[in-house]
Length: 236
Image (cartoon, rainbow, N blue to C red):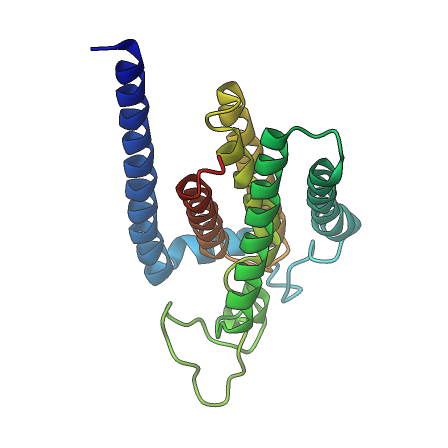
């Protein structure tokens, strides 16, 4: 068998394994998240760690480090990454390969944050700080529940702030097949940013763990779908 045929076959096997792994992982994660939401004990226990019954609220909610650094600062850092990516695209000396991959990153990041924003606008679910268990007036609802009479929509699911961090999962997809040694570090960086932004919002009482894990799931799936489009069009 010619060497070129062996190489092509090896690439096809790696591609098949890549798609199977991602689809299986997303399916198993979705099943686990359905269970986590319906059980809710872990969500409520984690939220209770930063809740003060004496103050009937989350004491760290509006502190400088949580709000200005953790919320605004990290969000602006991700925006700066997006602006830098745009600069790479429009810079005249950028190679076609890099411009294409930067375009993928920017499109995926925009799709992730936009999709999460749209889902939040249509969500009936409330943030922890709105619930009766944490000093609010709203009740916790099952994942696909309808809005009870007399209760306004909470618009708090999935986690919007975390979407900026988890949208960076576009970076390792862009590196695949081009800079393979970058894939793992970029994946860890995206998970670190998304996890940090998730944790800050959880401490502030703004989201449950399940909210943010669903954000991770949506961002991962969106990056995969956009990557599939690029591969189908043979842009990457």
